[in-house]
Length: 555
Image (cartoon, rainbow, N blue to C red; front, side, top):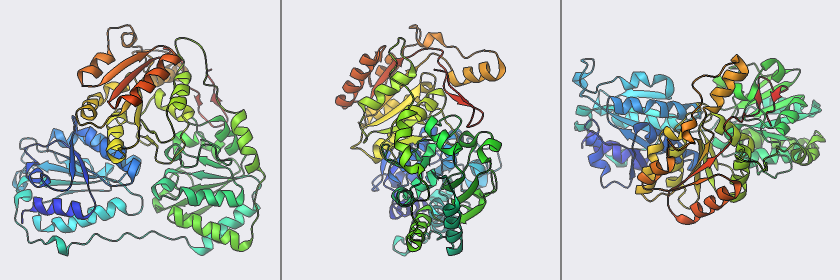
């Protein structure tokens, strides 16, 4: 059969049911066999959005999707989306078209070495030059996407390779099994010894816990030992928001007062599936202090990447949590700290004020209304900038996999296609993209996809008419302000509502909290893709700082 047909059959057997793509001459042979296959295809408006949609799809459902496009600029447009997925450990299959294999290196039309370009933003990238190896390459690609720390894989397909005849029978193809590493018993014993000796331990639930679907197991461990839990930004929602041990976030940007306090008062940190990245840690001297660190991760290369832990445990997050709980029960351990009983009261006492009654609205109040008007089944996406930081600080998320950010890359443009992908994966849920006025201009055209294909999403623009985070950095760090003010985004010269309506959406503008709440109600009831522009104060800054003990408050 044709290699392209074998590729489609393999994708079906590996479980792919949805694809986000844009056809083109370089990939049309594969598209011939997608037509009629049990894979739903969603025609996007930009290749970057194909990857973001597949990213949001996986984050919401833990199912792998296909991002597919043609060669040259189509393929290079995909790169930012692959980088964003790679940074967040999101597996997706990217397939790109390519010029004929004999044209490689000849500067043929739309012939970019995309496999080479994508080496650093995928777990592996292939340019297939031997059609007979396609089944082997596909099998390895799906294995790599799922194995260890997950991530995207790219397969570049020259046009003649797609059309080549190969000897293939789908009944002979079997997906490669993926095993999860279990922790060493000695490491589990050592970890519990350290926890037993600690006076004020804290657990960090990282995004790896969500990827391992181990949230309940980590929560059970915390409950048994009475240890407060800080969730990283990528694990937001991983513990119920009102759980008595939920100590919010720690960090210098999307951190919260309770999370920073609980962390700074700790003497031992049990980090599970986290990466100790810079926006979480800030100044490492402050972060490390005199604390001891236990780091559990499925990826060996994470150990010592930022600093050396006192104990490194190579294991799947869920298996590690199970082993720790089983051994703790075998030992008859009691709660190791009284701090767990204090968390709920601290959370209320340290809660940030959001119900400001001033006009123009503070962004804090906009998020107050978002929290009030959407239920816990709503899935949110967000990208980067000051709006993302406010979102991380203020949004209350009640369920795991219901807050889908571009965390590691911080990609403006992820929000809307990511929300569309989440809606495809979870059609019964309300899905809402939250972004700034400038962020709306990145991939904003993808609202047309949601509108045209009947996959309604809600888009809320926090319009502060500024590059807010860049302005804050200029003013606080360098004492100047340049090319960050955009008054035309609020004074009528730029009209986002007309843009939305032109793309087939409903849209309205809100100046007050009451108007915002009413608009959200209409958006949810409409059954249409709906854009809401919330007009907010132009020069409000967000709370942040250089270290956990020195986060500056701006309101």
